[in-house]
Image 1 (cartoon, rainbow, N blue to C red):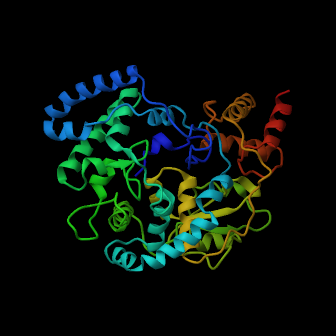
Image 2 (cartoon, one colour):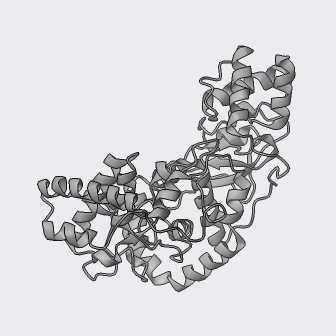
Image 3 (cartoon, helix red, strand yellow):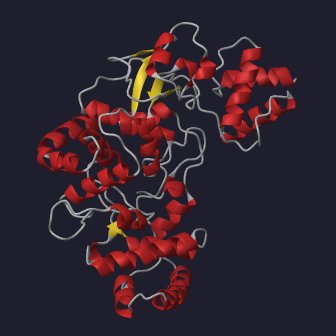
Length: 410
């Protein structure tokens, strides 16, 4: 699994970055002498600690042979996005027509593998396909940076040294098991590996050998082991086959948006009694669900089921779980969303969210710490203000809301 805290945008909905290509250099300079010296000093100190913890010297030296400070890793680590991206922009790429078409085509081509996975793990094949599409664009973007070099560079940077060194110890276990040769141990800039972007720790815990060759190969061209490993990860975290992740729903006029909080779970019968209906088909009655409107009252509304939380164990972002659910359904033949996104809205910056929080606190609405993050306290405070003004209480921060708050604050 990818390094959640490293590449996850924590503002607003936690929308993960898909690519840094638009804002990063196409080529990265060679490491400076100082950078290489710092890498070597860290490596030598880590070597002593690793050997003291039982790593064979020959294995350590083989893994690090020819590896040094990687400027691409350093750049991406230092330039992670810190802005709010509109969820529809994220979904336009995550659940694109091309990704849907390729997912359906590859699902047909991989039918035998997917049947074998479903026979071993209680996970729907379209969900496995969706994870594959989201994590590596069906294996097209697995990452070509040596994992040892990526983690070593992150350790040299110092900000996540303890974490990086723990993952490197897991790398030595993987190499010692013979699952992959050091030259083939490649991945993303943050050390996530293979078709389904497992970190070394997740690999050790969940990787499975579906092909039967005695190795758990998530790196090679055959995706069978990686897909089975993703299915095992989801199964071990409680995924229920046959149950949905999300469904788009339609609300009646005048619906109490205080209930659309993404947390209040009730039965299908309860929601149906309030006039909630599914946009396509019938409400699923096999599990209680909550309602969630990621863009507020002007955008689509979703029923989110227990499987939604399981997907978030793979990547702890609401928008990621939504994308996986929508892509899985589209691969399985579902149609597009019925409701339109409010594409004329501009997501607010962190500074603007801080201003909203500051004014709400001044007006007595208790939004919590003015940190620029849209947590439940801030959303509840916005709802309180909206309700007092006779507005739709969707808790959504908008430019119109900010303007009204500024007017109230004088």
